[in-house]
Length: 264
Image (cartoon, rainbow, N blue to C red; front, side, top):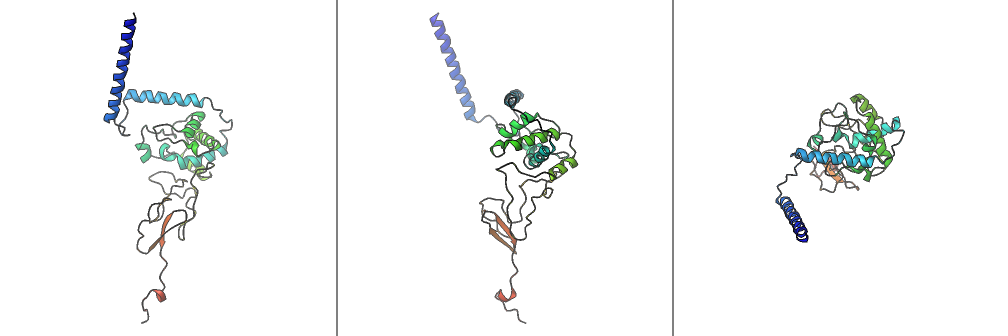
């Protein structure tokens, strides 16, 4: 009897060892394609999707949902942050697919067409989801602002493009209690109010965004420490104290000081 048990245990250990070696060999070989354009096997995707759903539901079920999520002020404020932070992936009413929404895998849900549970929306916005494009916004956003976004998501499905745009324009734009990009000063000749709602230029039929991610004038780099691009003819390039590199038209040279004789 004891010999039989020992034989069985040895067989189990050997099988586990062989299995671990096989898994390690598979990982080391690089045979598995991690590219986002190569979908999971149906069975793999089904398991991962069910695990995601159950994980979120188990944690969101412990949250206490505010009773005033239908408050117009909450919804309006949430609209501004959604437009700045979420629209590129989860879209807006009347908006076609974007480069992000088409390129991510698993594909982000179109939240203009499906309503998500408020508690689950809060949990996902705050904590994000591993191995997807969904960030954990709770690292930079206070809970009250996350609940405001959850409130907005309850009203988003069925909203018309005009209603969406009006709501965004009446919101405070991109604000969530710390961590968001703040407006900055520009040099002469560059408009200071290009963060205003509805002033951003977007691709295709995308509604104007109130996001702080905006185009800069030629020769300007967006808030980084990269070297300045060469200025075009007639342009002067300089760096602000905050590291922003900016170009603007050069001051005209005075005829009296340009080194030439202008008398005829």
